[in-house]
Picture 1 (tube, rainbow, N blue to C red):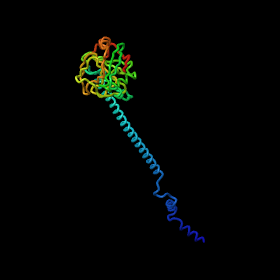
Picture 2: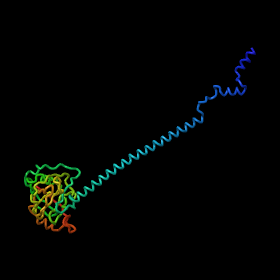
Picture 3: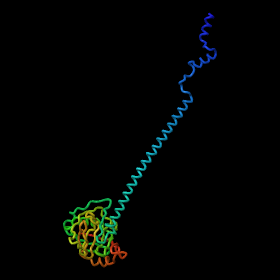
Picture 4: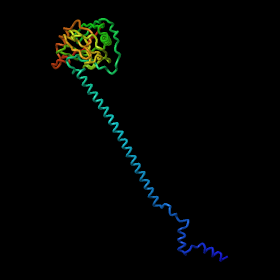
Length: 296
């Protein structure tokens, strides 16, 4: 039995003595395999992964900043374009108004009128003119003029004028323009007082314009924008001396009636006083208001 135990022990002992035994222990199952990652390698890989993620986040952040910058530039360009269009439209409108619709209009044309107001109303039916002559009185300051309106010759314009008179539209409005050279007219009926206003609608075409462009003293006609027949509204002019007013692309000016009495008083009280600043076209020296306007 003893011999057997020794033999078994001798077989288990590695060859080479203690050194061989140590080498055997280093190669036993309990030692780490040669291909298993070392602790330092794991740390290095983790650090590289974090750096990669950091670089990715930085790249993504830069991309987002770039995208926002592009969107902002696009928005700013759009806003700048819209602003430019608005400025150009306003500038164009101002030029058109100055040369054809406002106080700066050439003396050769009675000021066009009326840029319709924002809340447009319906144009009165020509049937309201009743195909007849209307009689009435127009008082400027304290000067009373007897008038008649020809509903048969200018049904649309007379229907509009009668409707505005009946509504009290003209009460207190001014006569903002007087011309004293070439043509001789006193222009009234603008709620803005500068040639730009109207009743909230406009109409056309031109009716009952003289074929020879001659407007006798006492004529009452509708003002309009130069070259635009459908721009008639509330503004009218009274011819206080015979005048030749050239037609334009839209034709002449719609004659709605005439002053039958009081023209001499109009000249003495208002037109003979002249234009402010010794001009030939502009505001009357003596301010003029419509104190009464009636027709029947």
